[in-house]
Length: 363
Image (cartoon, rainbow, N blue to C red; front, side):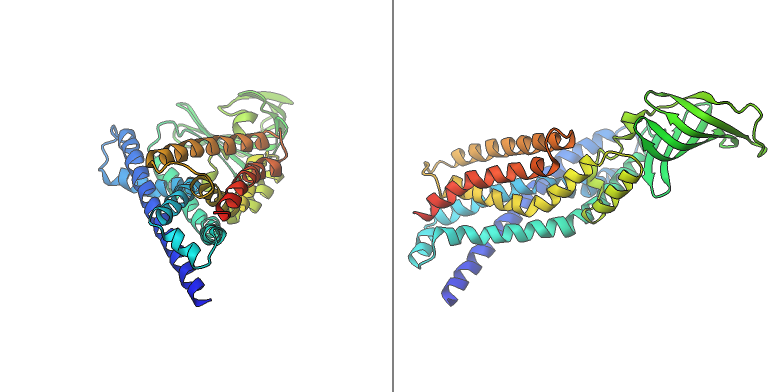
């Protein structure tokens, strides 16, 4: 019993060391690639190199979080090849421990790492990405049009050479904003007037306002209130519904609240629900990567050429990445049920990899 515990402890530590090494490699590559992009972005702003470096350090951890399943896949292949080529696997088998037990140790660790990443790392990286977008957004030249969703409603800011407008709406229903208030300011940010409308059709950039009331700068409702007027905006219904295109800014712990908020405001929550289910499935997704790596290394007889495994890893990663994203898109567009779209790729990998476990345990 003690012998088995010591062997399992050794295998666990070896796997974790390889995972850490793989994370460092991915992190370094991410820093190099993103740093060049940030330097290119800030080349005309006259900032010091410290800002691109700082933004890179804020952004790259989120990339590592997104690509961690492939870190586990590479680490699994690396781990199983190491103990196989060093004949440690043979020694372990002689001691009475099956290949299944050898696979089980990194499998359990991958589940633990998955839970840790979802509950602890993801909330941290979401804060970092928010700060990244906030700092970089201050240098964006096209940040004249902003929109956000809060507990107080939908808020839109629009700016041009003549005036600045702030728009608040209670909710979005179909192609219309409900209970809309438009605050107009001149280029010096002096209040000009307030426009109130019960309903605004935003199918196109030219909005159609119904049941309009206009409050002048003197605080008096204008006698020119109309049943219908138009308002030119940079937003339409489609653009407003894409506000949460970057879900990396939403923490796992905030997903349920964000979903409820979006539903209250009339927004589609399919993308947010897909993210929630992918987060819940993340530990099992990592486990499936371990099973797949065991199939490649222990369950199939292949030559000992390292380039064979490199090629196999790259092809598998690309296929899994596109298959997983394609399935998620089917869920977001409601071509498939959300649950099926998220869990189907994992189930397929599990079924495929189970062949590897059977073959590996028979050796």
